Amino acid sequence: MSDTGKAPDTSVLTGGAPAAAPAAAPVINPADTKIEAPWYKDSIDPAHHDYIANKGWKAPTDMLESYVSMEKVVGLERAGQADRILVKPKDLGPDAKPEEIEAHAKATKEYWSKVGGVPADAAGYKITLPEAFKDNPVYQKAGDIFHKAGVPAHFAQPLLDTFTAMNAEVDKGVQAAINAEEATLAKDPNFSANKEISLRAVRAAGITDQEASLIGAVLGPKRAHEAFLKLGAAFKEGATPPGGAGGGDGGGKAFNMTREQAAAKATEMRKDPQFQANYLSPNPAVRNAAIKQIEELDKMASGG
Image (cartoon, rainbow, N blue to C red):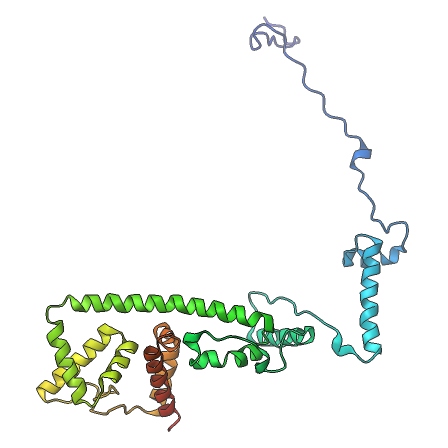
């Protein structure tokens, strides 16, 4: 019968050696856990402690700097120069409402105007237009756009240059797409014959080769070729071209849209990336065709 009052023999678990005694718990010195008191604890009335903590002043010099800044503001107000006080607008949050964005834009413009960054008028922006875009109406209004948005003068040229570089990349992409479409069309064994039919139909409709080229620049080679080919087929059959001689809504009406249809079409085109690229294209033929197209729609929409 075993003796239950004796401690169990652990030598079989430790290879014959007695088991090690458990490690002693570390002793914590209360002095080591002492929290450092704030710098104002014994030097400033406790009634002001919460105010100082909320202000985030870490040292007496912070209080002094804050006071000096306040004195400057008060001094300007007393001197009747409150308009010289600058209040930088706070950053907008991701959920800002339209009216908040509008107010922020106005405040930002006022801020930069006081700083001296926003010119008095659009002519104050000494910007250089790129040669390829000097006739572009958007670039010609760059100064007005910058002034309305409250853009500081020293930001204007870098912004314009960046926009131009981005537009050049877009134009490269458009040109690459045009080249790809033309290469695909050229592989069609019937392309040359169909192109001749299209050209005869276009000329019969009173459209000059230059105008046809402009239409092709706006629509793209593939879409223009398809449209002209349908026009040629309609003439060949002695029928009215589908949608009228110039598009429209059918029934043989040439460019006969209602004002509402023209306005809707103009809005749709302005949202179209392809049209935007054509409108800003450095290629005068492409750009002028797009400008003419949107101007005609705007004219129709206004009842002109």
